[in-house]
Amino acid sequence: MLRSQFEEELLNLHNQFYEMGMMVSNVVHKSVRAYINHDKKIANEVIDYDVQINDMEVKLEKKSFEMIALQQPVTTDLRMIITVMKASSDLERMADHAVSIAKSTIRLKGETRIPEIEKEISDMSDYVKKMVDNVLIAYVKTDQKDARMIAKMDTRVNEYFDSIYSHSIKAMQANPETVVSGTDYLHVATYLERIGDYVTNICEWIVYLATGKITELNSNHDE
Image (cartoon, rainbow, N blue to C red; front, side, top):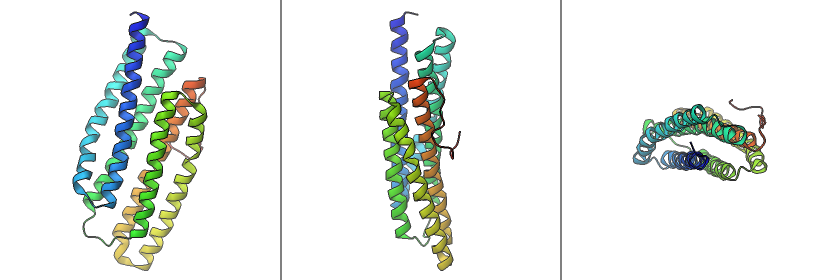
């Protein structure tokens, strides 16, 4: 294969990954909006999108393996292909958590809600979405400095989680009628916290892409 043709395939891989990332950012945002607004129609849209996102991950992985096998790329080219493979798997897991939030929307019918905690969940979601959007820009620019800064944002996500956890437990103790929705708030906050962890994973892959070094940016997240 000609170098120019290989570079075109590399660019296509890069663009498809970015497109997948934008779709994941969208479903994360939509899943929480659906949850807060009790909107089952949007929740179902999120679940439908997941099939597309899974397909995109499978195609990216297949193409990556193909390019490695046929081209035997080295150094920067190989790092870029590995980054797309690894980071697209993290994106797909984020989408799975968005689907779990969407399913919570469908499940929660007529339960006693707690507006103050829902406001916190909404704020946490906006913050996590900002992380997802920022990490995609850092990926496009191969900006390891930005990637390291975005990974540090995960501390705030953990603070949101701790606050929602504490408020939900207190609310359930004070009013047993809030037990179902309170438990659900804990689940939704956990899904968002996990999404923050996966963003940190992608930050690590960006650092790898830029430097060739595997670096652990936060010590308390999923591998």
